[in-house]
Image (tube, rainbow, N blue to C red):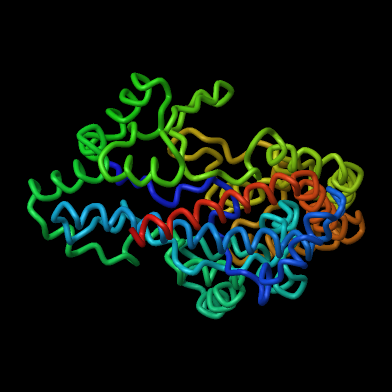
Length: 402
């Protein structure tokens, strides 16, 4: 398999990669307001303050990516290339407005379907079986499940952040001859970049090892010209802890520097440890057996019901469905309707135990709180990053004008 690679819009992995946002109305338009924000003591920003800061920064980031792309296209067109690879020069789009600091729902909330849904549909695992797909209420359930998709998921899919490359029309570039494509890649990033495009997964791993952990080739061609014009000469920045290296360029968000982002999950779990324990005890008291949490603070009920419905407790690749889940009851029904009834009863107990233990209330509160504290801790760095984006954006306009 050959990978498709892109050097554009490579913001660090995380939830904000799918939530690059437009500015809140009026945010950042007032110099007095900006000065007041910067003069506020660090760590005292409210969620509203921080959301406004992130949304404005993401708006600037989107504009900067657009400007980078225009500089690249201008350079390539000066060399005679008028058709561009849209997967390499990737349009960031208008983006979504970030409405919460938290990255999705608290992991524990996956355990608690809506009470009415749980009473009628259980966890919905029955719908993944052959018998379930033939059930008379299958279509009704699937319609409800699809209608329950979050607005952010729907918006992300509409904007092309759903993992499907088909939302981008690259047919004009694909229609070029192989020689013309190669010439374009050479002009864009140099001969190393052009060769790098065609590597298979295995070859890419070998190349990465030989390159000292670099994730992309050294910039050359129009990419180098754009990088030097906006950010100075690129340098290979090595992350010894991760064993990777990347060429410097567009300033990265401080969100993913250091271990702060990685500490969110364990901090969240520490705060709900008592409720997590009470939830499992409640399930035992209801004769649902002994469940164990995974590292994210959820339990593998999906694996449990795969085993229950199929009688198979190991996947084709050897993964176990029984890890961390109880042994099914000895009186487990043998027919599909009986098994579905069992799923519904277990789902109702999960919901009720979530309420009795306090987990379904404590988890989202703790999840929001640890995210707020994290962003408060890096608020000064976020302002600095925003200033860097503004400076680069100003420089980009000079280069485009020239």
